[in-house]
Every structure is written in structure tokens, then in C-alpha cells.
Image (cartoon, rainbow, N blue to C red; front, side, top):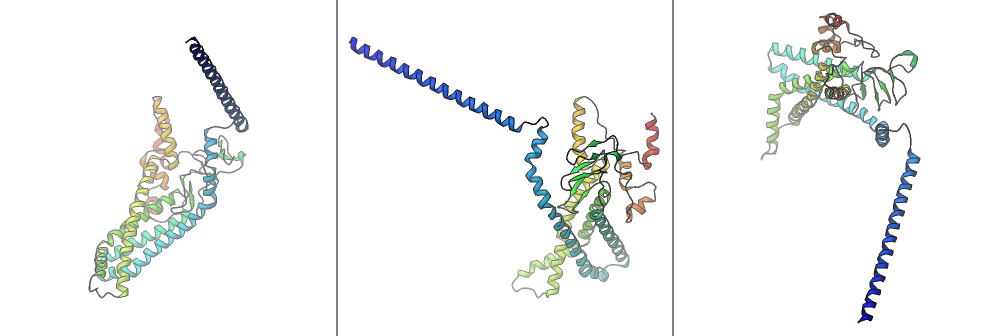
Length: 361
């Protein structure tokens, strides 16, 4: 009996000894892994350490491949889309002249014929003029010499003077005065800034008006053409000539394209109209929103220093100094320059008289 107890005790001591040894080895292995981890972490920090590194620099580094793709690939998309816009607009104009205008001259009264001819051609002239000016006018760039400007910040991307309301365009790879956005893939293949912002908005406005005009004027023709197309697949099929079939499909194409563009471009136009009313650009909207939230937490109210009130903001944007400018600069094609140089933002003449008493207080 005693021999069994001794044997059992010896086995238990041996087992406890093995457990202690295994635990020590396990702890030693864990310690080695921790040391290797800390050593690797220290090596990585020593290789990547930079006193100027922050979250923005890290994000820029991560997005560098995307920037390269935008710079070297997508810039050609703008040329393709500009050609597409010109082609689609030309096709609509051709359909109106070839298919709809003869029908209007045959069926409408003289008064309606004069109205359609006057409004349609005026709208077309405004579209062509503002689109050409928007794609060919430079948005405006600040001077590169630091001595030309005083009291301005320096752009950290192009290391050049950066006046107020100026922002760096990654596609143009330079700063743009009063930059709104880079309208590349959609319409212009150009940056929208201080000198062509009015042309861009006017093009969107008049293109929307033209599409709405074509959609409303061609509604009855569209219904008739669509009904005729539905009979193509009847048995026996109707005897439509090739010219009649082309007319039906052209009218349907015109109405569908104009209605779609009117909805999409109309929403964009309303969005920019709201921004103009508030006296800010697309980029400034996000900046002002963050600033407004920051000041709101401190119990303060944010005021946009470049807003002069809704009506005056429109007068400044359109360049209306006297009442006759509503005709010569808004309702007729006008290549007049915007207020200011984009380098400094003094009070425009059209609002100086109204703001003088307020500034005196």
C-alpha cells in the first residue's frame, strides 16, 4: 500500500514539474513575441517618422494613386464629353429644324410662329454663346511671384500665393481664383472659377430652359409619334414609309432626351442658384458649414463675409451695376468681366451705397 502511495506521489510531483516547465516555456515564448513586436514597431516608426506628418498627409499619400489616375487618364474624358454634348445638342437642333419647324409653319397661327421663332433662336444663341465662353475662358489663376501679393497664405501643394476664396485644383494642378469646381466629365472640360462662373451658370440655365421648351412644345407630337411606333408591331403592320418612321423616332428621341436633361440639369441649376443666393461656391459651402457648426458650439453666429444679401449677391454675380444691364448683360450675350480681380474682395459698386450706412454704424 505504501509503495503505491509513494509511486502516486512521485508521478504527481513529476506531473507538476512538467506543468511548471511548460508554463515557463510558454511565458518565455510570449515574452519573445512581445519583444519582437515592439522591436518591429520601433523600426517602422524610425523609418516612417516625420515631424510634419499628420492625418492630411497620410490621406494624401493613400489617395496618390487616385490622383495619378485623375491626372493621366480621366482628363481625356472631358474632351469626349464635350464632343458628346456638342453632338447631342446639334442633333436636337437638326431635328427641330428638319422635323418640327416645317410642321409649326404649316399648323400654327402667325402669332405663335413669330413667338416660337423669336424665343427658340434667342435661347439657342444664348446656349451657344455661354457654352463657348465657359469652355474657352480661363477661370483665373493667382500670380506666381510672392512679391505681387501681400497678406495671403501659401498653398501647400503648389507652393504659391493663395488669395482669399482661392483653392487648389488637383486636375489643373494649380490654384484657381474663386474656384467652384472642376467641370470635366460633365460639360466643360474646364475649371469653373472667378472669370467663367457666370458663363457656366448661364449655360446651365439656358440649356434647361431650352430643354423645357422643347419638351412642352413637342408633347403632342411625342404622343402621336409614340402611338404610331406602337402600331409597328401589329399584324398586319401599318404601311409607314421610311421617312415617316424616321420622323416618329426622331420626335421620341428629342422628347426623351430633352426631358431627361431638363430634370438632371434643372436640379443642378437650382443647386447653384441657391449657392449664388447665399454668396458662396460649392467648395465654400462645405467650409462655411464646418465653420458655422464650430462657432455654434461656442454660442456664436457665423456670417459669410462675401454675402451681401440675396438680391445683391445676384447683382454682383451677374455684373448688374445699373438697371439697363439686366437687358444688355443678362438677357443678351455679354462678355463683360466679373466684379473684382479675384485677388481681393472689395465691396462692389452696386452694393456700396446700400451698405454705407451699415458700415458707418
